[in-house]
Image (cartoon, rainbow, N blue to C red; front, top):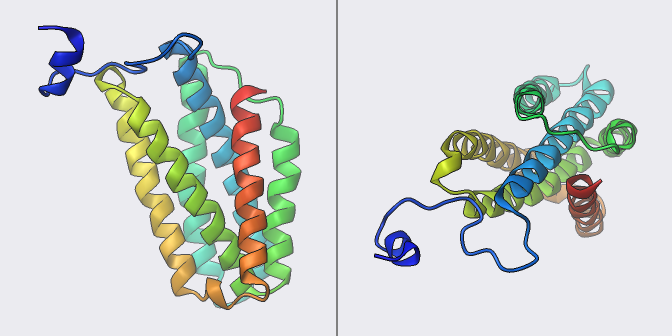
Length: 194
């Protein structure tokens, strides 16, 4: 039975299987995933820290703290993976440190709904990003797949919380969420490469 036939009939699938000439080798693909996921979780923590700094004395503080604490676990997990797998982090971390906090604080200054619209937009992009990674990973990376699956579920939870908390009521909702999604996609592209 050929490798492709084995995969189609339920056999083991390897990371990067079916790659074309010029595509990243499986090791490079996984390194990029870990690098960009660490950067994204670092940025997410900073967004929630910015939101919390502005909204800490409001009824929304506990919700933001809950999401921030989950993001801190995500960041710590990817920091460990960076070390364990000897993957260099993105050199853009100082930028994401400032930009993440500014985005969180800036949207929170516009009101709770704007902060929630920011959260919704970021988490929608991360949901798509993690799903794409899961499609690329094979059974040889089952531990990493489990981590990404768990974290994706929590990001979806954050998106849903944001929607329940009035994200769509934010002033300039469409413009705000489009800008945040565009910035998030650009940050993903840059962090995976630089």
